[in-house]
Image (cartoon, rainbow, N blue to C red; front, side, top):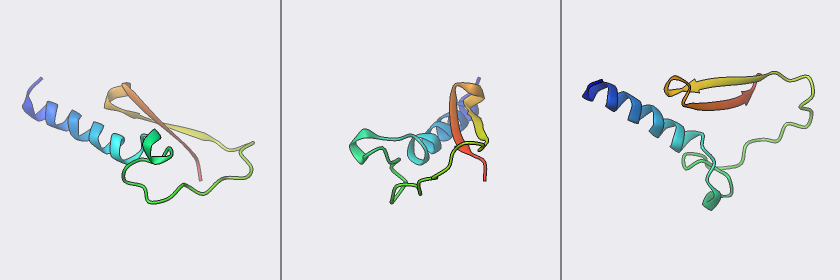
Length: 65
């Protein structure tokens, strides 16, 4: 591993931390979000998608459109 790899890994973690990870102090909003996401009334039958971050160290989940 080298400095370029470390910078890439830190940038990926920063994007996850600021764009997706919920924070208790912000009422479960990530720092980059301005408002709560729109509630989905019917979750049954919806497909859940997983995105691997940092080679699978972190996972992000969202519903398919």
